[in-house]
Amino acid sequence: MPGSALPIEPQRDIARARKIHSPAPASNGAGPAAESRADAPLVRLDHLDTLWFQVTGTICNLRCVHCFISCAPDNDSFEFLSLAEVEDWLRRSETWGVKEYYFTGGEPFMHPDLPAMLERTLERGPASVLTNGTLLPARALKPIARTARAASYSLEMRVSLDGPSPEMNDPIRGDGTFDRAMEGVRKLLEEGFLPIITATQVWEPERDEEVRQAFVARLRGLGYENPRLKILPSLRIGREADRVRPYTNEEHVTEAMMEGYDERQLLCASSRVVTNRGIYACPILIETPAARMGSTLEEASRPVRLDESACYTCWLHGAICSNYGGIGQDVS
Amino acid sequence: MSPEPRRIAVFGGVYSNHLALAAAIGDAAARGAETLYCLGDLGAFGPHPDRVFPLLIDHDVRVLRGNYDDSIARGLDDCQCGYTDPRDNYFARLSYRYTFRNTHERWRRWMGRLPGEIRLEANGARVLMCHGSPRRMNEFLWESATSTQFLTWLAREHEADIMLATHTGIPWQRSLPGGGLFANVGVLGRPANDGRTEVWYALLDFGADTGAQPNLEFVPVGYDHERLAGEMRDEELPEEFVETILTGWWTTCLEVLPARERARGRF
Ligand code: SF4
Ligand code: SF4
Ligand SMILES: [Fe+2]
Image 1 (spheres, rainbow over the protein chains, first blue to last red):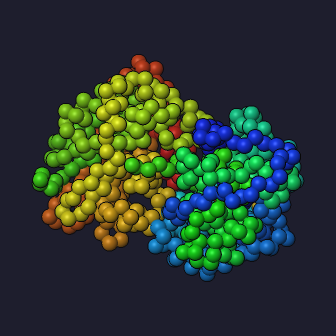
Image 2 (tube, rainbow over the protein chains, first blue to last red):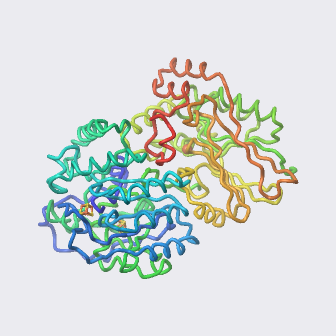
Image 3 (cartoon, rainbow over the protein chains, first blue to last red):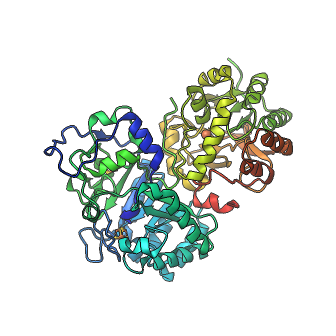
């Protein structure tokens, strides 16, 4: 669910980032010639808090116009992970002290073994599934709900919706997807889940509050009295680069911008993503060959160089991978 | 060198609930606790923050610094809880401003000198007390969102057998493979989102018969919560906070709750 991979703290972290460093002014791509990225900073893996599984690769039943890894029914540049592979990574992750696991794609519910994978995962720790909510067949959802009820760890379901109405959502996610995702939310509620609705901010930031309220009203209409809602920044890579605009030359992270900046709020300081083609720095950059870190967790634990433009969005918004906010600060 | 304690009481966040703190101190003494500890977050939420400090000092409570204390002491803009939900943020800001305004300079300085962690040895076990987690003052460790393998890693990394934390507001404990123990001791400041008006603390016994792992019991403390509600109303603190004190259900700061803990509450 790349449209929704990044929960953020919009105002707060933009304010924090700005306090430290004014972001480079946006231009229309007519800026100076491409700067060298030699000054791109390195981010150390602080600890492997979260391990992501790109469980259905780039294969998705939808073809959202803002998808930052260009997922589609026919994009098999990344393929499914097998149950055996997931089990193997779960075992390997133990000594790393992984705190929680995330399942993304593509659309995880396209994987026939998702129920078994979640069952194994929840024996070990909490899990989150990032879904577009349009599939959720009973043969998968029922056993998953049973597992979730029996587990001592939380299973979070994150459903992507990019607006509180078909008029706003469907131009982005496809015709009929709003109704189908709402039906998915209803099924999840029925099974006892409290889905986290994640919306990419495809509207002007000034409209945040209005959109938020419309979401709440809509979800209450489904009987979701106290809906959980997250708003995420859009990442201008993949198809999203064509929809809005690509990043400009000025929009990248430099060494100087990291001074006084708590780099642990970046996803790549606390997680890695397992794909069928090896381990990548973060779920955002799997289409960037340089973001492939290796084929073992040891290899993948080396620092990440922030030389991609998407890193600029992370830097600006202080992206954090957790479902529940709360970024870190040292005890010292 | 002071003798190793056999029974200690460990309090979590006080959130300016001076009435619950006084009740818990009395309760712990009546149960024979030799030393009292408090894991920080002295202000927030409740009325008259300055009433908490004399109680802690008079009863020789060993206190460490929570994120709230750290923010107030350093004059930061917010409590460092990292809320992103606008409603959570609104209430967090409101109580932060109230607490900041009503905390005397001398107590701000006092909080600034509190240690970030407390370590002791009891029955051969290395006990580490902290606020959020051993690695981060503002890390939330919820029962349903914290893997055992992560706790084991923390214990190894921070050279501890017994780890005690607070910060979330809901008490829980888990034995670790190899004989360690993690416990979130809960908080005195507000009820545990369980529909009860009592608040919780932890009582630890390091008896000869308990081995390296202490016996840890969560103790509910009743106190005059209606009087606290009255004081909060007099101070014009939000009615949403008062409701939590009177009903035992959280009404704010819900965003950070994982699914399991959220489903147990009313909101
Ligand atoms: S649902 Fe849309 S954003 Fe998510 S992976 Fe599929 S195409 Fe991409
Ligand atoms: S896009 Fe860049 S900054 Fe963001 S998580 Fe990935 S590597 Fe880190
Ligand atoms: Fe705290």
